[in-house]
Amino acid sequence: MPDLARPVAEVMPSIPEVIRSPEVTEHNEKPAVNVEKSIEVSQEAQEATPTQEVPAVSTSTALVAPIVKSPVRRNIEKVLEEDLKFLYLELPPERRVIFRQQGDLTASRIEYLMGQATMKISYLVYLIRRWLTLLPGVNYYFIEQESKIKAEKILFLNAKE
Image (cartoon, rainbow, N blue to C red; front, side, top):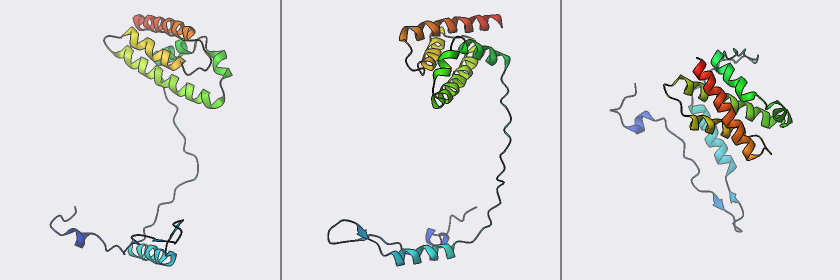
């Protein structure tokens, strides 16, 4: 625990004087910095700090455990991915990753909603609509229709359980 009774000057290690303001050349183009002085300051700072050994880090890839999804979440994802296979395959690889991540996030939020005592259909439709807007070149009315259909199917899943 640090000693709070001692003044800060005693506790802090002495810091060498840093160049306060660079000298400006005649044309005000670039400030001229005394490089030798800054090198000396950095060497003094290195000598003042104690050397510590850094633990070696393994360069092998760490095995990542697969995410275990609940049956409810798998059913939600099945409903969300219905009729979107061809649109998904038309996406460029970068957009596919974003679309998949947002889809997983949407599915987890819907799963959370299903666990609640009451579930608002308007928020469910909003979540699905927001996710579907990531698809480029899709008609607004298609997105509205698909989000309502998918919301009804999810509500049916919730009523089943």
